[in-house]
Image (tube, rainbow, N blue to C red; front, side):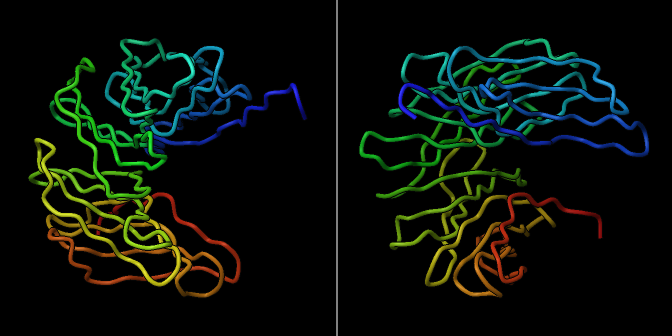
Length: 271
């Protein structure tokens, strides 16, 4: 409809559910105007509610719980006119903003996930290039949000990062790439503690494959979760890849039925 600007709502639930200690859980969502909103619920009773953002689209994609609050990452179009910036907010346990930082590269940027580190945070996302392509974007900040370093990774086409996990000597990143064929492939890269490239690998079949999350399952082994249309039971299927610390694939599994099945998160469990 002409003259009406529609904004999609963004809803997701993340963070800790500690059943043994407390029935608390954190619901992170966005309003119909896509301002970022964080709601803390205790036994179905709202404890507090906050919204963050301005007049345009502001989206939260991921958050982590800290001992004294939260870190939320996403993107904002309200903070820089006509441009999308990657946005990170540090909140206290009541949702009050302790600090917030924006980062901008190319023609726009976003953060898709955040890691809590001993000396700060690792912010993982994407930068939108003037050519129309997309590269992965990784920023390390200290505990106050000041940038330590930033890097972009990618080839000649669209390459996206969605997730990261800390290793003994750096980080493993997971996403998708179109730089090696007409269809996407799972893309996994390792960088060291300073953001320097260690290795980059792609995995996939003849059609479309993507990595959306990565978890560390042993000291030198990782599992990547995503989806594939290169085989399996039907349309898209869950895809899990087991890889070692050099990026060599040890195993791969698909799960799903006749319709579309996609994995967006993975976590390691004991045993």
